[in-house]
Length: 254
Image (cartoon, rainbow, N blue to C red):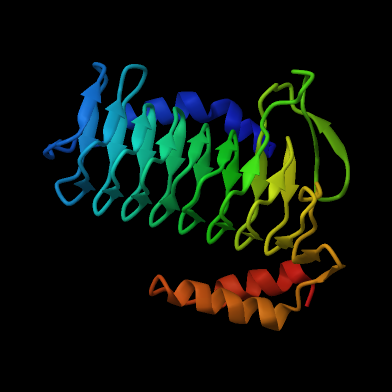
């Protein structure tokens, strides 16, 4: 019913998915810990000094995944086909990384839908991330209040909702772009297509297709947004299909 419901169910459903998934019998050159199942596709590449910690949950690494040196993967965790975990990345428990993502820094309790980039240092916790999102270097989110109290999320209409949770990160729509060192506060909701390049924390909620800088706040011109989306997708040999473009046009109100 709500985005934070996804976070509530993530540990149980991820554990169930990992248990039900077809076993993969691939070679494992990583240092491993724990007795839970570890599935690694034969086409995956794990560089030396990779650590897989299955002490508290299973780990699944799909076809074409690349795990760069000094990365640590903590189960339960699922890394989708064609994704890359970069040097010194710490992927903590209850994380599901969709296909063709690029991830590093400290990530935990988070879902990446696919084709998202978080290639640099910075924390991301207890969050749901849409497709084609890009996190600039050093971007970090908060997932816990200084008071340790219940987190209230403001939806895109500006209404507040009690989540019943002490840990809530951010909910980020497709094609959102964050500039370097962006701060994302606890329980933030960022609408589809927003471009955030401010030295102050990203506002919550951030409207769909907002174009935010320190000196300006305006709406992303739809034609420009579509041009950028096509450029971004072409870098992964993908095209913006007509159905998706129609959804974007509808969300942008044009």
